[in-house]
Length: 155
Image (cartoon, rainbow, N blue to C red; front, side, top):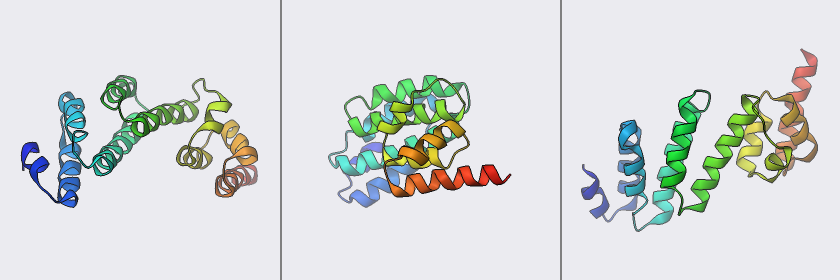
């Protein structure tokens, strides 16, 4: 099913699955164009959800490596008119900085979403985990961070 046919399908569930399939097989050189096309779907909630899944999958694969920076910049341009997607991309960059022990600011972590705080709380950066154990946004985040610290102290 080509993209024009997908856009014409009245069932948003069918379009969502088709978008995920196309996004999962897109060549790197065509990725920004495909993301931009998906984001033209009239059902913005569904379209952004499909792109978000793609972003999360790609970022998880790319963040440790050198290709991440170029990829995230191109995705930010594609998502510029979609604040939630742009925010998720910025948070992936913060997660990358924390995880790879690159420079980052504690205030940025504390201002981040529950999604990022929880993901970071379960990570291996002791400084970030300590910050989240003390001041994470939710009890779940604080408990996850504290549990990680407790496991490290037992080792």
